[in-house]
Length: 342
Image (cartoon, rainbow, N blue to C red; front, side, top):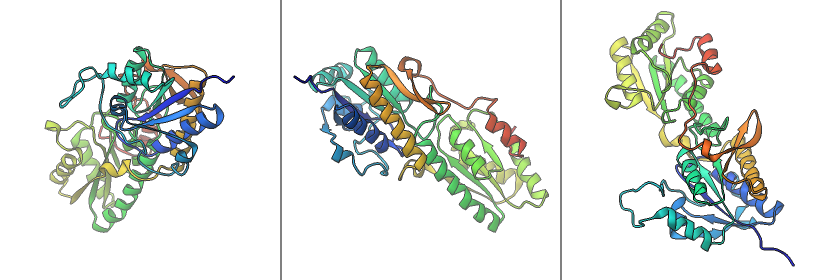
């Protein structure tokens, strides 16, 4: 007589990013093929657990999605532990608990960034068997060296910077490019270095506008007729002005050199994941299935020193991984002559 199959749910919450489908596939295929589990996909993040919107994920449904951007499950930013305008459900956590039981779930995989992992931890404290997967282009989830989605975003931002070099050189302009990341400067730092940025402004580091302007002037005086300024969207600006527009106007006013701004925006989150993100998301997903098989719940999959491992969810929620002052890439960039506006 065979026992009941382990039944798991998978959801994606928060903003979309490249690699989500690769992660869903990694969890689902490993769970089905390696461990003989039953897998259901929950629609639209935590909203789907409240509205009981889901479908069974078979091997066939998981085939052909590795290279796709977005998420086949859909996503939302609904936070069940935080009251929001327009709420029609009074006690969303309780409804989630009840529907978890009604669906016969033995575990739930929550794929998302900081907010998702915080919610995942709160659900774990309510007694649900939870495993988290860290995703975000911002690379700011605490407890892991890197999140999937980040490499794809850096590739897109770097390509944009590469293209701006030719326009900047042709017109002898300063080009300011703003990249995403909220309060973390990982995309700005990595794409700025990879794309040969002359000035990189990070949310984690104070900058002096006079220093930025003088860097541009000094380059012009040395016969370098254009400059590339890479700006993290979360840098501090007066009255919370848009980062790129503020920096661009200030450079123009202080140097007299023609300056243009480019805000890359959501382009960084769209499209097919890079090969590195496909592999990382697959490794994360496969390991999540293993954690469920081993009954290691209340954890988030992470990578440390190239090795896949896990960390307790209670250590992750509410924390943000930011660039530290002694970051070696910052040091290397300064040695190359890159200015951080200091």
